[in-house]
Length: 166
Image (cartoon, rainbow, N blue to C red; front, side, top):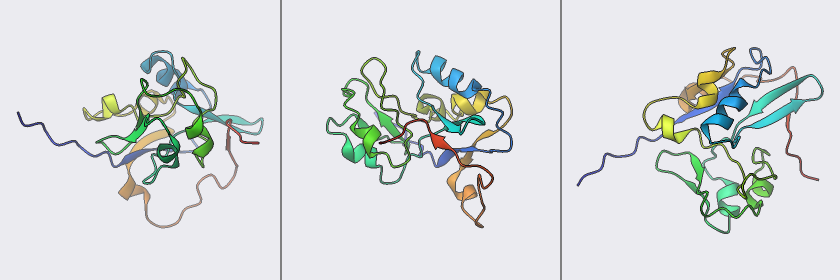
């Protein structure tokens, strides 16, 4: 029985700061789509705004290396996923992530983490947060399209994930 080769996801979620209204519909879609577990971290821009902060699905993810239980792994589609059965909620991944996109609080003894909605993407769809974004601020674009002439993304404001290390 031959199985079809996995389609490698070379796309990532990109946020257009000029379009985000802070409505948090992306977080609601993530929460419902992942059975009452929000894998999307809200980032705060002072008191001015709340923006979605997504996992970057790094080429050499520090979170995967830090996970002593093998719960984090790069799936056949190229994104970093979590095995909820192996995760013990030790928060090593949260401490290892240089971008602060894995919260240190956990739900049902599992640290929440964006998985790019691989269940939808593997069928040619787009992540729930992108599909639900009412202002069009979130897009799912190929990495090759995002690399090019240097641009100043978010040059007007500075955002920090709500997950902060002491």
